[in-house]
Length: 409
Image: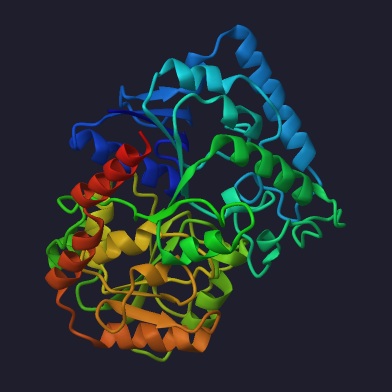
């Protein structure tokens, strides 16, 4: 069986990493998996950069479509970033490239930012599968809808747009998706129950076949390592309780819940022996912790990430909406308990009291209580690893995808 995965990238961003891990798992299962990406970051020869597959005229059309997409977005969303909003209305011949791979299945992942124009979907010859790496496939353009539930009907009057009205940009994109999806007849993969429930409530995907299959993780890489050695390698203190936070989305995106973490940290200042470890970006601009702070920066390889998770006592994720946060899965696989908010994708993996704590949504006091509770416990790290790998091993996730693919042929 030959499968082609489409993703904006193979390594840049959590959605891209999730898609690449599936690609890797499928190849280990002896599936001829190939990836087509806009931005290639690995040296993997089975990952193909789109620009190298397009001829001169098609590349020019792609650049024009990209420019028109950016112009149409400019001044519209209140948060005008391509990872918040995608239209995918501007055509260029990517379906021709896709069809040249002669895949049995074409599997779509994060394809926003006009990477895959909606008009091209019905032109793909192979059966289609899409993985919901955020809300975009069932909304009128936003990647996360927040409290808005207009996707259950037809969008319009979008709270994220400056220019509103019943027939606003979100309503137009919604109608384009209705036509494209009706012609394409996609099967849908939801990474967990939270995103599956939202998709089933939606007007765009409510009648679609939706299978819940999680992200894959390599348990031979993400596993508990000796904590003392990990701390020594990262120059972290041996005699402190270390709380880990990933500053991967900055502090300006309200969905990431940084303000709630900040409030929880402010109430930890009288707790002796707790120190904060931050990885990802440089020190977030609004972070003024009362706790001692250790900045690790970006870790580009999975072994270093495994070392970091193993070094810390608890991982905190304050996101208000996340589809299936890979950081939670990685931390648990390394034997590190997690504290997050209920009502989002993290709840698919955190099962209190066995492997962490789910605070009431947007309640910083409860988040603080959860952090203190998790830090006070003596965790069986091997058991945390065993449980998460039992659900999300590469072998299991690949097998579930292969069964889905075979059912479509």
